[in-house]
Amino acid sequence: MSPRAGAAEARGDVALQVEGVTLYYGGLAALANVDLAVHYGQIDALIGPNGAGKTSLFDVVTGLTKPSRGRVMLAGEDVTRRHPAARARLGIARTFQRLELFSSLTVRENIQVAAEAARSLGKAGARGARALVDDQLQRTGLASLADARVDTLSTGTGRLVELARALATEPRVLLLDEPASGLDPSESSALIALLTLLAADGLAVLLVEHDVELVMATAATLTVLDRGRVLATGDPEQVRGLPEVQAAYLGPHTSEEGPARPLPGEGTMPRPEAEGAVPRPETVVRRGGPHVETQAEIVP
Image 1: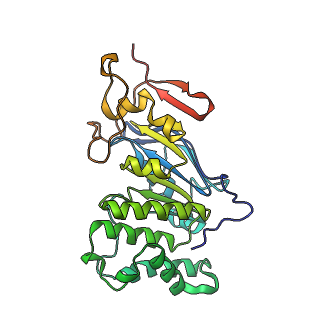
Image 2: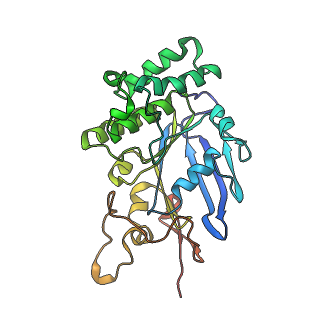
Image 3: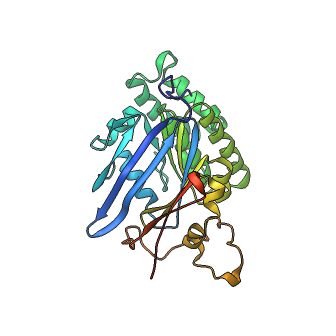
């Protein structure tokens, strides 16, 4: 797979820009003035408690949901009013938190659907759809399962099929919604290696993941979303240690409790708020020099 990166898509350049995105469901704000940048040639991660608005943001970026305010820019082009299919043609691909596969088809056939779409758009070049499929089967380690029906596979393997299908569209920006969910430790290690290679090839990757260790092993930047607002963004190690970030996951700490504990892994970060909870008033607080910007709630 060769991401569509060229002279105008240099490593570190912004591929996807979310600017001031706000999303209301009725009177509830699922997203509030969200800014986010995703860069060519690296993995940018987005984390947050359950109900923080991460999947809602993915839906806005891919066009499944129209924002109430703000805009989405792809390679400098405003795509906010573009249909999901148009955004896919321009190079946005995604996976889903809940598996979205053609269960009665084989692994190869699932990937073939995307490869044929890429060919119809002229992305496959001289290689053709079959070569695209073979590339992704090899890249994701699924070649030995090519003829297996996906409804016979584990959830973790199904996620790899969904990833391979997304890659077969030859995207320039790849959105991954909890790709490690259901993977065992060895599969997670393989996923880390794969994502690292994809970024090295020039692909822009936005990763939503509850496996914080996977995030820390792969991400160049880390953004924390809480109650629909950006709580912090910047260097992953710096962001991870911020008291505001620790409190968002674990609740407030008193001085007697000592230093903030590490962020937990999957299954230990539930929040009672449903996605779309109304955010409280906040004041922007800048910490850690130019690399970290946080938005912390100020409570009298």
